[in-house]
Every structure is written in structure tokens, then in C-alpha cells.
Length: 148
Length: 279
Image (cartoon, rainbow over all chains, first blue to last red; front, side, top):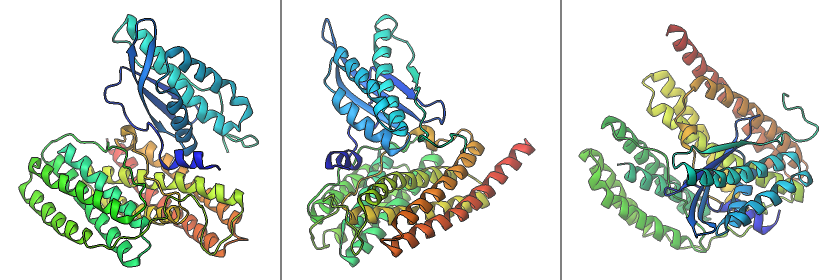
């Protein structure tokens, strides 16, 4: 466990509620009820949208908080194209990590994507409700039965 | 009033963290005692909110605690306490406000007289004095401490919320025991984190966790989580038993305590199920 990971665990970045958010999204694990909510403060820069500020809150384990701290730190300041590329890269890496860690990262990435999509929908309908995406990964470590 | 509650919540936690940081036994005990007093203030204000019909929550800001010297965090605690005193003017309960102000006056005096010392609670050395743990066991212990310190804080807040909103004496007794037990665990885990140089403030708790809508489901899930915690304690005890008999016995002790927690939660569950049957 390196110092960077420990630092994120000791001081999770961007954790909490963003009072002045203009888009929110949820990534949810349908198997155990764990979820992540991402709050965005997005500014409209003409042709593109920029994530000026971001927060997340998790009902989940420390690994989810760790993933949230890292991914939201990366996403802050990005425009939507780059943020969606970050989501794709994260989702593309899930096969290379243990299933329980993959589920946590997927939950955060999908919450970010949901928040981005919510913002886009609210450009057409200001009252559009917060979007929720469900993860495909199973949190249970390989070799263990989820029902055990 | 909610702003006052948030401020007291934050200064309670910061004082608790400062107790973990100190390596002076007298200072440590003083800071633990002061954090207990501040937690009681928190519960008094919460009860006052309910009495006066004021909505409140357990939201709070992140609390930066990384310091090199104890004096720095004590200085910040004193500044926060001064802000609490200023905020007390909004308290609708004059007697409560006066009582808290009197306590704080002494706390500030005593905090200003605590000797300074160097802090090692953030050095990330992850070493336990007198014990040589393998890297794997150290990583497992690190994750366990972060998970469980948050979990104990979460349980304190949930049980406190349930206790505050319960009018049944027996339920209040059960929740108070569970709060006390979780405080003990939080203090032990927090101290281990400080000793290993990885101290961190537990993250904030989501509203939907403590504003429990389905209490029987919460208790049933809680019993299952306690059973999982028992298994984790068994795994950790086994992982460290060769290197540290003391740590292994500690995790066996925590494991056995979970049996008592499960029994209490089953007792509470029985109460709520009976109440549902009556309805």
C-alpha cells in the first residue's frame, strides 16, 4: 500500500455534499444496496461544459471511498469529453483488478457518468430527475458465493 | 440551532482526534474526557432541537487534523470553541446555553495550559511498537482500521439518533449500551491508527443511514454486519497470531463482544416486531 493510497484513505478528497450542485448522479450496486452519489457544479463555456467543482458521498466500503477520492480528483476541472474519457478508461480497466475493487470503481465511474448525463438532460428539461446507473460487477470476491 | 449542532459535532471529533495524537498519558486522558463532554453537549443540543421543533442533521465539514505539533490542533480547537460560544446566542434554551458556555470556559482555560508535543500520528510508518507484522498483515490491518473506525462512528451516530427519537426506556437503554460499546471500539481503533501513523477523521454519514425508515430491516442488516465483523476479526486474529499474541487476543476480544451486540440488537428487533404486531 503506497503513500498516495494512504493519503487518500486518511483524507478522502471531495467527500461530502455539494450544496450548489447543478447535476447529480448515482452509481448503485443492486446486489447489496451500496451506492455512490456524485454532485457536480458545471459551467457552460459555450461549446463545452466544465466540471468546476465535484463532491461524492458513498454508502459503501473504504475501497469505494478510495476510488471516489481518486476519480473525483481526476475529474475536477475537466470538460465533459475528458471526464467521459476518464469514465471509459476506468470501466475499461475493471477486468484487470479484483472483483470487489472493480465493483467499487465501477460504482464511482457510473455515478460520474450519471451526473454528466443528468446535466445534459437538464439542458432540455430543467426538472429532469437525477439519473441512477446500476453496476454490472459483483462485489463478492472470486471463489466466494454471494449468498454465503 | 443546526449550525450550532454542526459546530459542536466538528469540535467534538477534532478533540477526540487530538486525544489519539498525544503520547502524554495525562494529556491524552484530559482530551478524551473533553471530547466526551463535547459529545454530551452535542446530544443536549440535539434534544433541544427536538424540544423546540427545529430541524437538524448530522452534516458537517471535513475536519483537517494533520499537524506536526499538538499545540497547533489545540489552538484550532480553542478557536472552534470560541466560535461555538458566539453561536450559543441562537440557542433557544437559555439554561442549556449557559451550561455549555460555562463548560467551554473551563475547557479553553485547560486546553491553553496543555504542554506542546511533537505528533507522529500522520507519519504513515504503519509500525506497531514491539510487533513485526508482514506486509500482507499490515495492509489487512490498515484496511480493517479505516473500515471499522468509520463503522463505529456511523453506529454511534445511528444509535444516538434512534435513542434520541425513542420514548421507550428499555430501547434507550439498549441504544446507550451500543453507543458506549462503539465508543470503546472507536477509541481503540483510532488509537491504533494514530500509533501506526495513519490517523484520519471518519467520513460524514449519509442522512439516509441515520434517519432510518425501516428500523427492523436496519437491525436485521446490522446483525448480519456484526456476524461479518466477527469473521473479519477471526481472520485478522489468525493473520497476526504468529507475530503478535497481544493483537490476536485483542481481535478475539472484539469478536466476542460482537455476540453481546447481536443479542442487544435482537432484543431491540423483538421490541419493534412486537410493536408492529400490535399495529
